Image (tube, rainbow, N blue to C red; front, side):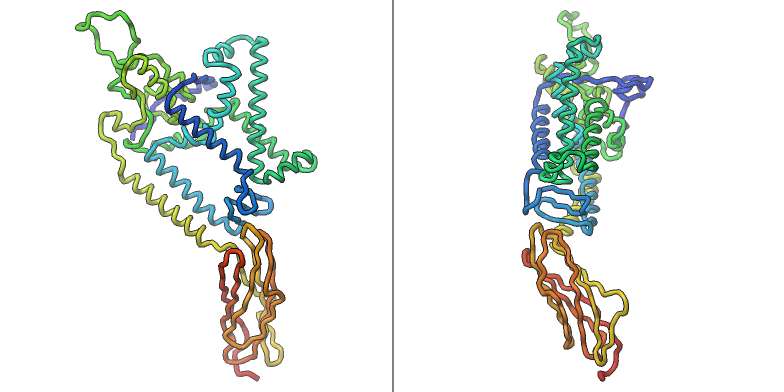
Amino acid sequence: MEQPRASGPDTGHLSSIRPDGSRLAIYPSDVRGRFITWRRIVFAVLIAIYAVMPFIRMGGHPAIHLDVAARRFYLFGSTFNAQDFWIVLFLLTTVGFSLLFATAWLGRVWCGWACPQTVFLEGVYRQLERWIDGPRERRLKLAAGPWTLERVLRAVTKHGAFLAVSWLLAHVALAFFVSVKGLGIMVLDGPGGHTVPFAWAMAVTGALYFNFAWFREQLCVVLCPYGRLQSAMQDRDSLLIGYDIARGEPRGRLVKARMALADAPRQGDCVDCRKCVTACPTGIDIRHGLQMDCIACAQCVDACDEVMDKLSRPRGLIRYDSLNGLDGQPRRVLRPRLFLYGGLLLCSALALTVGLVGRTPFEANLLRFQGLPYFLEGSTVRNQFELHLVNKNPVESTFTVRVDSPVPANVVVPQQQVKLGSLESFRLPLSITVERGPRVPFVFQIEVSDQVSGQVRRLEARFLGPPGASR
């Protein structure tokens, strides 16, 4: 695959950083078109999901509640505890292989359409900036001009709005960890009684404000490694946004007066209006080839299509295509890279599914009491155990305990039924006494049944004792 080129014709630096290392502020222009319309719809849906998810209740709990302090996690009607952390491994590998597969197939569709950095920056913060400061031309004029009263008022209003939105987003994020009800109690009580959550909320608010008010595209082009890894994930058949050089070059300004048709040099469809450059949120010139700064947002596509419509020329001078497609060659969809990533994704997703489906909604662990493995009492042998029960149902449940012994035994179970709330635990002592004889030691079973799910779990344990004839 071709390596990303620099963002300028003879530059070796990032598009938003000058050669001396100073920051170059970017003011993207407003665009209209099919892709920006669909992206705004996607942004609205994703933001709505993020905002309402803490308020939705499933199984008597929030749809997502990550109670890290108590090591209790409620996810879409299911409950998990720290012992279920192994599921996170399969979840992370599934997400990772999904990203590999999507990148090999659709390029940086995640960056331009679903990444939280893009969703909140383009869907919220830059919209506020446009409403307060106006279109790109006015924003450039304000930035280059002196600090007049108008500029001060606009700056105060804009950054006040940024802080307010950052505060709201930070509290929504906090609600995922303390629940909406808990967050409401903390807010009413004040920061004095909840120092740690208050400090986290303020820290996240400050980080969001710094990122979306100033750092912005630098997170994508400087900190995020994804742009630098895309050349390893993609090939010449991966979908990306590119400029049709054969059709657009040689570019030139559109002029009304032309020399005689026979003497006129050939001119491509690109009229060098630079609307694709001013529309780019990372400030690149897409006409210089594939670049790691490009987040595949398609704003340059909408800007160019609008110009082509005005000139009565076909759309697609800048378009979604592969490198092969831009070179006039057929694009292969099915190829070894895609099969490899797809196979890894399928295996990981199957492992995750099997783990979730096969997971019992309760834990039952049988432990032997510390100390001597058995006790001799005349002609009998006694073993003591402890049954550790954890209810992982989202609601209260009753657990029934039954002991199956292959030899006659005196089984002492203080409670044959144990009622536990969601994610509550209980330790139940068990005592088993048998006559000494040739059948000792032996293996017995403990059966634990869950009233809510109807599932039954059987545990095997070894009864220990000295072998020999009974006395």
